[in-house]
Image (cartoon, rainbow over all chains, first blue to last red; front, side):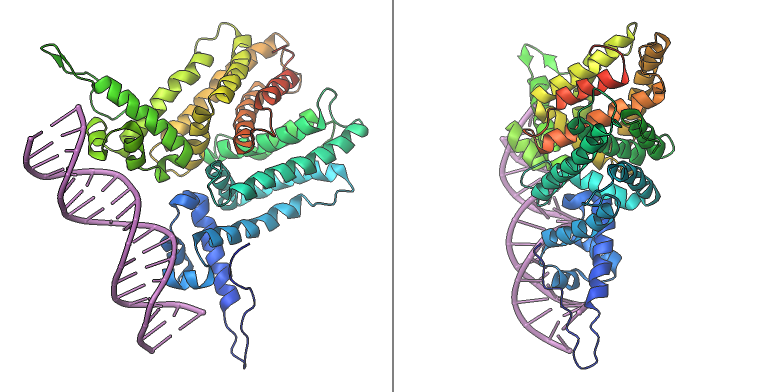
Length: 205
Length: 205
DNA sequence: GTCTATAGTTAGATAGAC
DNA sequence: GTCTATCTAACTATAGAC
């Protein structure tokens, strides 16, 4: 997106530890931005957690927004793993939603990130605004395609459009995740997501 | 919650303008906290928008957290108007959800507030954390009661528990509101909420 | 009731030594 | 590649004049 180059200088037998340090910083930033948000999360906190100075951090990332980009990219890999772009099997998409919820329930730190950043990014001036908007639109397109094919196989509950099913699925997962993050003992996120998907489809997810 | 007294000194014919100023400050704070969140929204911005100095503001509210309390209280009145506590008619609760979505769509500034603050309040150290957690629990209880009575009248779709219906309704509204706030042209929040409620109930909301 | 002035902290980012 | 030192700006909050 807009950081420095990824090529580590590896000359004359001296292995620069840049990649590892970078990864450590991104991991730390993911935790901090997830908990405090981007705006309130400070570079100092990230640097401390990564075991580096603030200036050391800014050697690897041009500025705070660049660090956020790296964090979002990193986290995106995880999401894509459950919702692959190429969907020969539309049922796999619906099952992927359950798997994603299960994954998020197991690693709550990562679940927090998008809940926090998405809400923050409502404002158009937020550095992640365009990215988040496009991410939601892409997710809606992907799921609407899957639900459309389910509908053709008469596996989507009659009376529900594929587009609505897609929007609802995303909304319900976001909303349930928020309720769960606020009160983990009082809400069974995975069970609710699964029951919901069983209600709007005729699948045994 | 924890601000100064609400009694305006009204002595010897001199009408202190405290109540009006206070209300102006709370209105300004609502906009600022909705847009920037509590942590990133500054008292300076609120004060500027309210046409008062920062110190002037802090005469009316002991500190920033006190101002947030006042904002949340204010906004709560609006919500309660659509979801009254005493529910003789369980259908009224479901219709109230549609009315609430309609209201939020018309006044997006206020819709932003809870989306932003709720996500921010995930952290236990956030001044609104306990309030938000209890608010969600109360909303779940209220809606579960309504759905339970609907189920007794066979107006809740079979296979859905009242508790799930309550959680889903809140989650879907929160999630749809987020999608809508991110892309108002691309999402019809009210239509989706209504269609969803028509799907999980047998009501013609 | 509202102001100016200011204390005390923290923020993001840069310069330059090593 | 990482540091110390530093700059500038913003923040919450208080003291005290009017």
